[in-house]
Length: 77
Image 1 (tube, rainbow, N blue to C red):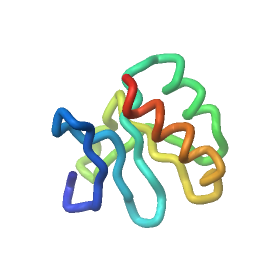
Image 2 (cartoon, one colour; image 1 turned 90 degrees about the horizontal axis):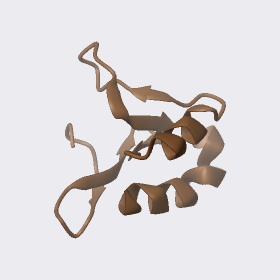
Image 3 (cartoon, rainbow, N blue to C red; image 1 turned 120 degrees about the vertical axis):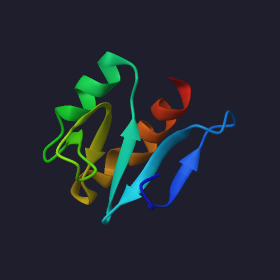
Image 4 (tube, rainbow, N blue to C red; image 1 turned 135 degrees about the vertical axis):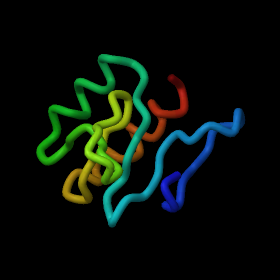
């Protein structure tokens, strides 16, 4: 995705990817997305085109303690 290493679901769709040392998660569920955005430093992902992607949340390395949980959520919905 955008030239970054990513992990795909068995459907072939991207679930999460590495982005400059941080991780971006696709969180289609509004509750999961809101929880992720409440983390310090988390934000809606902008791949550099000036447009934030509404279901994609960038979570900084400082919150890597939450990455495993968010990865699970990105695979389930």
